[in-house]
Length: 356
Image 1 (cartoon, helix red, strand yellow):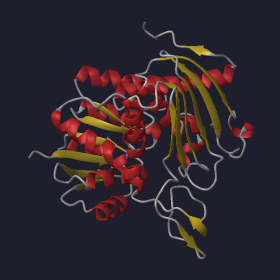
Image 2: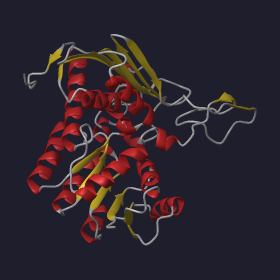
Image 3: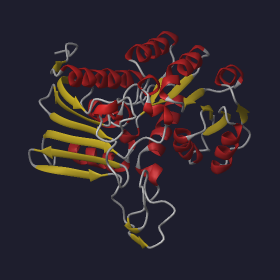
Image 4: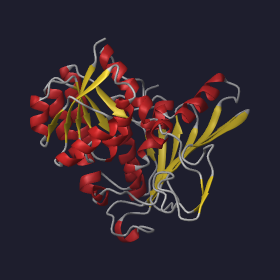
C-alpha cells in the first residue's frame, strides 16, 4: 500500500496534536520531514511519537524545496500560514493548514485561489467536526428523532492563550473569536453548508476594554448571534475569562427534543488528589481536589479523526468533506471578520452573497 509522505512544518503545540493522529496510522502515512527553528523540538517530537527515517529541517523554505513529500502539514503561528501555504502549493504539494486559515481574508483568499489555479488541495484542520461526541450528536440530529433544530448554542472558552503570538492582532488576526470562536463558527457553517443570512455581535473590544487580558490587543470575550437560511438561530461564544480548564459545549434545541454535549469535562474517570495530578484537561490551572481527567484527550477532541480523514483524502486525490476544505476556512474567516465589524460598528450584517 502506498504511504502518504508528510512534511510537518512546526514542532510545537499544534504539531503535537497532529502527530498523535499520524502515530496511529503509520500503516498509511510516513513522516519524511519535520521542520522547526528549534531542532531540539524536532527531535523531541519525533521521539515522543516514534517517527523514524525523517529529515530534520530548521528552515521551512528549504524544507519545502528539498523534502520529497506529498503533503505539507502547516502547524505554524497564524501569521505564517499564508506564506508557508503558498510556497508549498507552488511546489506542487497539497497542504493541511491549522485554524484560522490566515490572519486576513485577503491572505486566505489568495491561498484558496492559488490551490484552485494549481489543482491542489487545502485541508482545513477543524477538529470539532471529528470529535466523536459531536459526531454522535449530529447522528442523533440527522436521525430525525429529536425533530428539526430550532436554536443551537456553541462555545469554546478558556483562561487565555499560551502563545505569545495571540497577544497581537498582527500575528493572530484578532482575539478570542478568531482563536477559539473559530471552532463553533466553522462547525455551524459546516452544519448549514455556509448558508447564513444575518449576524449580530458584541466583543469586549480589546486592550484596556477587555474584561481580564488588558495587555492583549484582541478581545477576550466575544458573542455572535446568527440566523441561517433555513430559519435556524445560533449563539456562538468565545472567551479568555473561563478558569478551570477548556470548555467545549454544544446545545441543540429541536422541535421534539434537545441534545447537550460537554466535550471537555464529560468523562468516566473521577479523581480526588491532595497533592494534585500531573495533568487533567487542557488549560486547567489546578489539579488538586476532585477532577475529571481527560481520557485520550486528542482523540476525544477530534484531532485523530481529522488527520485520518485528511490522509485518506490526500491518498485518494480528493477534497475533504464540507467544513474541512480551504474554501470553508475562507468562509469562516469572512464570517469572523463580519462579527468584528458588527461589534465595532454596532450593526446587524446581512449576507449579500446568499444564493436563493
